[in-house]
Length: 301
Image (cartoon, rainbow, N blue to C red):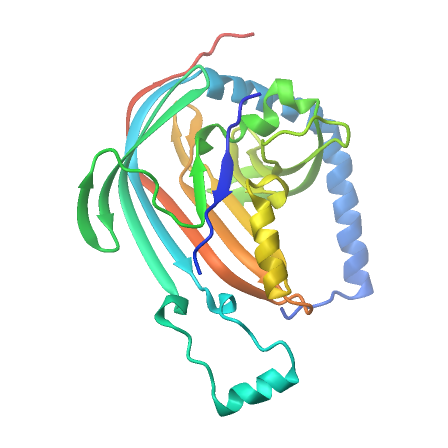
């Protein structure tokens, strides 16, 4: 089975909520039931159109370059030993520990010329590092230098959820509607069936163009992130629960196909009150696309 999108971890060394009234709640419930009733009638048709979009996505011949701009922030404050009890906390007041420079918040940035070549569902990525932390570079065979999340082949990510051969392994539910870039979008949540074979393909919520069935955005579930056990281990050392948030946006368009335009990955840890400490965030923007080849197979199956 093909792996379309994966995320791996490299370890560094060393609402207020407003509660609606009962009347508002009833209206909200009725609207949700109405949405679900309407959506269920169209869900099968939408999934068929989405599988066709994924077929075109996988069969496309593509060749393009763009600018890949990455900002990575790491806050290792919790990596520094915290007081385990009141006695240690009181002792620290008399001699407060000073975190070493390695524990200060880290800001990193990278700019690449990114080339993507694809045919028959196989993707080749090439990067030329142009700038690192504000300094000019020229590394034509550069590797991705992010320290927390490493990502690849995200262009084909939607096919891992909606391609026809995978749809038998998921339960799909319409959970909402939204407008993205003035496009009406239907939000579908995909959850693996209990008896489905375990794969490394991610899943989550997808924003699908109501007219063309193109995937515009995906919020990935953290359940199948590569090496998630390392986040869990870090969470245990913090006495907190890890929460990993990953979003892909597909806003660049050519010949009816949508290309990755932004990727956001956040590593957070929740305390017992549910408050989150964001340890790292990786924000990737793709822009200035130059398409040399985007040939789409329009034949019927």
